[in-house]
Amino acid sequence: MWQIKNDYLLHNRSLIAYNDATKQFMQQYKFSGDFRLRRVFTSPLVDLIKQMQPDLVIPIPVNEYTWETRGFNQVSGMLGDITVNPLLQTVNQNRHILQSHKKRQERLLTKQPFKLALHAKEEIKHKNIVLVDDVYTTGRTLYHAANLVRQCSPEKLKSITLAR
Image (cartoon, rainbow, N blue to C red; front, top):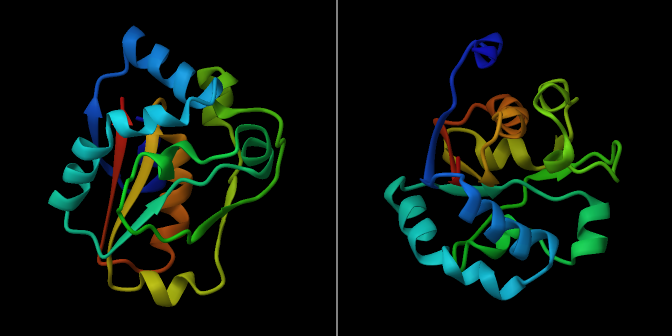
């Protein structure tokens, strides 16, 4: 397992399996910009997050290019009334190349795309943290985020994805 290189395994739970129907949903929601579809999985996703009793919910951010072209963060959009804390920010590297367009090996070799907000250490220390992303493909995006969050000494760190 490539994740063992990190000397820890990130516990992730996914709501649904990634299959052709999920792929079609994500295409319509993310890439066609049908923001109304965010509500389809909000309730079960929020229920799953609440079961984990987090102190902080941190969604995986989108980069500036994605925000400009799409106009929303697909992860935050699905979280309904969950209070999120945007402690992760993107570093604009190769901003036009979407992770979803990369092959497996390219994803695994991706450099750290995130940085922590200035006040992150105080916010995260000794807290139960849940990272949230839409699709777990290789896990690389979540491990990038987890590597940064772990530097801030959380009590617990887990992740949730809509699909895997």
